[in-house]
Amino acid sequence: MSTDTRDRSFVSAEEVAQLAGVSRSAVSRTFTEGASVSDATRKKVLHAADMLGYHVNHLARGLSHERSNIVGIVVSDIPTPYQARMLDEMTRQLQTIGKVGMVINTTGDAGSVANALRQTLNFRADGVIVLSGTPDASLIASCVANGQRVILINRSDHIAGPVNVAVENAENAREAYLMLRRAGCQRLAVVSSTAGTPSLMAREEAFTVAATQDGMSIPVIKAGPTGYAAGAEAARQLFSRSAAPDGIFCVTDLLALGCMDAVRHSFGLSVPQDVSIVGFDDIEQAGWDSYALTTFRQPIDEMVEHIVQLLSQTEPGEWAQTIAPFKPVPIWRRSVLPRPAV
Image 1 (cartoon, one colour):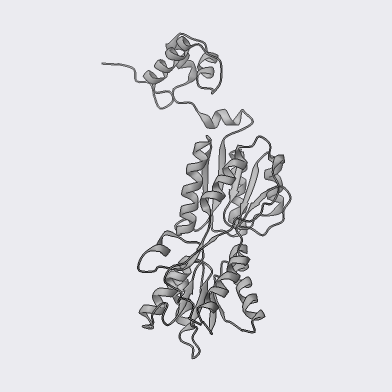
Image 2 (cartoon, rainbow, N blue to C red):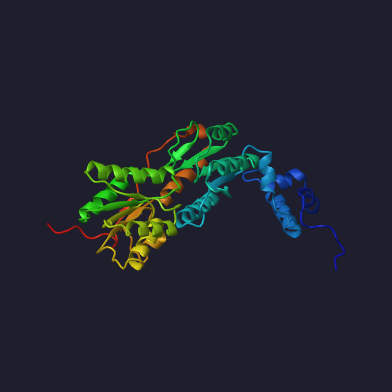
């Protein structure tokens, strides 16, 4: 039985070199992709590393090299289906290019986003992806000055340095208006969110502008943050009025699902026979039979693939600061009445 009582929680490269009978630099070359080392030396080092339980400290290595391979992901509302799907796709695709996603959970307000960005600087992340909140321009400048690649998702910021990857919101909100009008809806409403993010505001404003241009005044209900409960409360407010809508645009699917359930279960109405509802995002639940929500699918896979390609580039100076918006695709289901026959 071994009498070695040393703490084996950390094994150094020097110990591996000693057991393998090679130099410290040979151990380093063995675990450095593309470095020159003979097959015989590699086998001895790997065998010794396996015997000792040695693992390369990539964080320490990154601190002494130009790149840490850490990518900070600043996000709020992680449990929501859209953010969860974005994070899942983001972290998996980052791993395919040897990057480690460091998720920093924020509340989305300016202070928490600022703290999150400082953490990415402390860890010397070589990239940061901002999914939530509006970052301060001076902090963005600090990130860029420290060699970080900064990517903003669905922001309206015009800050020098970062790339803004966005979807086309206004065009699709106008299409949502036309969907409901073609379905014969005469009394429309918007269910929005108190979150006030640029993408949600763009959808809300484009829909109301389309209605105004058509001579229609519509209510905009914001019963809380972007979630199921806020959508349900918005429906209760709308259908407690004398002139309840027969067509509703919800700026996210999660709002739409709450709205739809309240319409059916609190007021005994049918979707789409009594009221047509359109959402935005195409989360998984939108396709469930109990909802069958007509919506707009955000091309998350394409957006993340583009981001990963950007992070694979050698120099962030090669980036264009903004790109043409990605175009969501209309997904027709059963929450909107068919166009009336002429």
